[in-house]
Image (cartoon, rainbow, N blue to C red):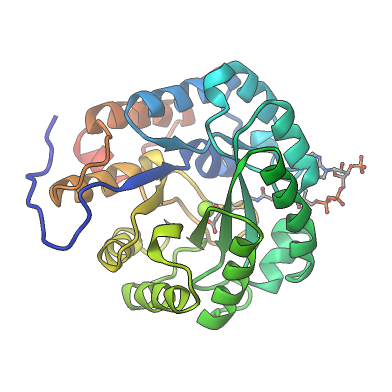
Length: 306
Ligand code: HMG
Ligand code: MG
């Protein structure tokens, strides 16, 4: 299978981490429910393709996200290997469900805006911290690692522009609860490269170095890959992406797929940056999942290599 020519550039890292969110962010937004065995195979195929981190599912309220209501069954099916895959937990109830199954990595997900906090968490902007604080404290006490997401970092469908200072304040508060990493979510894909640089600069000024930041771009306006490159040049080394460009958020109007993992891998390998990912296996996995979902993958690289 064709691969990009490797042309390394000075000043870029030799290796980056791709944090794969297809089984969670991708499948949570599908109108149909993917059968449990296919979900397990999806996670296993992504691991076999070399993705170092694969977020498997969410322990949220099953009525809110019925697509992932089988989270416990999935973790059981994945067995001991499944415990190292991160899972979303919004609250102590979700944490209890995850810890019962031995999950070692959990992720909380906060909102930078009041409206999305209400719509996604049924809580106000300030109230969300009361939900996350004991969740993170108990996760850490149980020996689990915690990632924090902050959503609507670049714009909100109901509130419009979101001030950089507001995003930094909420993000830092979430991180300071005890997370090891903060993922900056462009939930509706409206960000542009200058905005990415400005936000990263502002987080750095607030004491959060690029080493503890990850970027999570959705591709609604076709900016996700450019934004990833801006973050790479800034110094970020963890990139969220979704196999085949699956994804969205059921509680965010106008959110479409995530940055496609294949498109990100193509760019990174072209820059001579190691990801550990075998592009041919990854493309084969996305094509297999596209058949299950009954529609072609939105990834340009998957289309080009098919
Ligand atoms: P709530 O209704 O306010 O919950 O939902 P509650 O605390 O009032 O509890 C009500 C009932 O729900 C109780 O049961 C709880 O036990 C139960 P009852 O006592 O009435 O029988 N309950 C649960 N059951 C199972 N699992 C749980 C759970 N929690 C409570 N975890 C809640 C609040 C946060 C749970 C709800 O709003 C929810 O599940 N939200 C999740 C929405 C979601 O998953 N959105 C997508 C993920 S975020 C995203 O995609 C963005 C991201 O990709 C980054 C980006 O792109 O920006 C991460
Ligand atoms: Mg997302």
